[in-house]
Length: 361
Image (cartoon, rainbow, N blue to C red; front, side, top):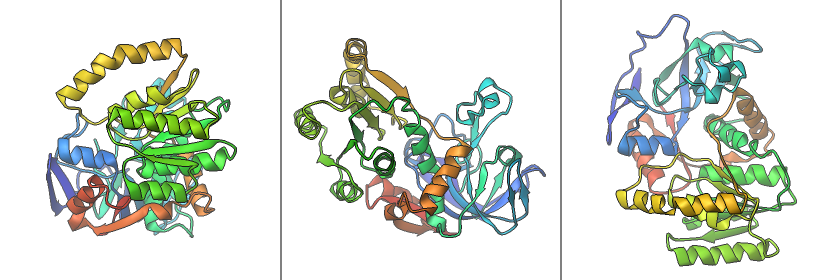
């Protein structure tokens, strides 16, 4: 049994997987597919305050059961394909009592604080069985698609933060897999709303147009260019700025761009963790913080965050993929063997294709 252990920035080694330390109550799964998330890319390059090496990364997992699993509301047979909820809650805090497991005060995470899916096998704590965090993969869903159920569930959770439907247009800043998943969900749920995608990678923006975006705009970090895009978006929205803006990439400058775009009484949803910034970027953001605070105040802008998902979101994501209401198969462009995990990470980092997946172990 092999696993890709992360030992620190730019250092991954394929080694024998040690499952001897797992609890007798843990569930052992055989990994079939595990996709690369931008979090994996950032951690590989820079490390993470949450990650203590050596650790196995990877939290977008499709696997196969080795034994029967009996949860509170489900029974999963041996050799059944499953998707896995990656958040391991403490089950004791206020948020866990409300079943908001992604907000648990003491949460652990597969592929971050607990060994993840870039391995032949993975040990899943019993807690995930108790909260029905291991769900069957439906027959017409491929292994690769099933590994994308987790990020799709996160997108569902983000869109669920929209309590009021009183908006006319939406902008997604980010043309990666997350932004494209959000686009598909928004076009499904809000057929009468204009959805615009802003990004920097031409082939990804072409995919956004194919998936139904009402407008796609290629921008650079140049402020003048972005102001021009802001004007173009208003041409699609009756001269009004968008009411709802998703920040769906990890660039700190996108936060500033969101405030430039958002209409009065609009909402900004920060979906992505922001990558570590250079000193200059951090200083510039600090200088602009007062301006953004004033924009929140004078324009009555609401800023919200969205992190991870819930087991219910995971089930909903599976239903949407199985019914082909959401076609995530279009996002799977690169597949690799476990030994080439670094290549998969570098491919994702270089914006080659859309989603990189490990599917051979």
